Length: 75
Length: 75
Length: 146
Length: 146
Image 1 (spheres, each protein chain N blue to C red):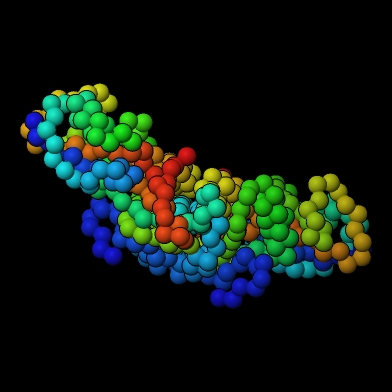
Image 2 (tube, each protein chain N blue to C red; image 1 turned 90 degrees about the horizontal axis):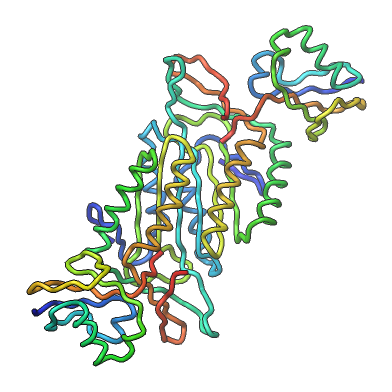
């Protein structure tokens, strides 16, 4: 599946802010990104698929929008 | 002793805001005022002598300033 | 509309612009990270079918300012505050207007918030201030704090 | 400087006049007796010998607005509030300027104060907002909330 990835906060120092990538599920997506960007491996990440935070691995549908987010630091 | 009495809050509906009176101590002062103003008897009052709140009866010095105050209701 | 040093009393309603001015004065304090503000506003309470239109505040000013110094010192001793400001109206304040303004500032939020909370409680309980509730029919009743 | 309905984000620093305007808008609400306000101000933190001069805030705006609606509903369900307003800066906010403004109003003080407190905690913890601390030497570090 082709999905759109958006990155936020400190992740934008490592990855592009928006890009398209092919992956079957969130696990595969993270594995692919971590292979190319070793710094990602030790990061604590929140993942939202189509604006819903997911707690366990999710299988993608074509054109899903995936947000990769480090811990929040607003306020 | 002649003392100056100042009244506050709801007491000003019953007594003058400021007056002079002769009394030896706070107990005598309250007894005199309650005799002339029956409404005072059931009131809960705070008393300050020369800007110090007193908890027990105090003997007056000449020209003491006595504040008679109902429960506070600021804010 | 005048306010002397250490005088917390403000004649009439406290304008919203005073709150803005108080905030602005802290822009040059780089150690501050949090401000906590409490505002008391006159509520149109209904009592025995009559509606409050204003509260007329009077004080034992000398005793109040002594008590305020005592409270101020206790709060500064207890919390790591950068600043503390308190204003209370004297005289008539109408429904919808502000009669009470407490403002605390600190590096981290917990100190400002807890100090503001404690200041509000202590001032209501310990400051010799009295509110006379004025009704729309020109009668009155003395306010009771619960 | 524009703010759409339900949009909590404000471009750049939040001016003190916005706080005054927010207060003034409640003068015609006779059921309100208490307002509680929290303001976050950019602190000149020193980190490894470098001093913060500003924070640049970015957000996941879509997710943030959905989350804000969820928080807003939960707070209104939990506390008897008359009003609730939240503003958070987006973009660069310099030391001494305001980046976060939470404003709650209620008949009696406890609801406004507790709701304001809970809003501040939940927004810091649950809203997808990130602060990039800009140092005086033009390096940066991503803020971590504790």
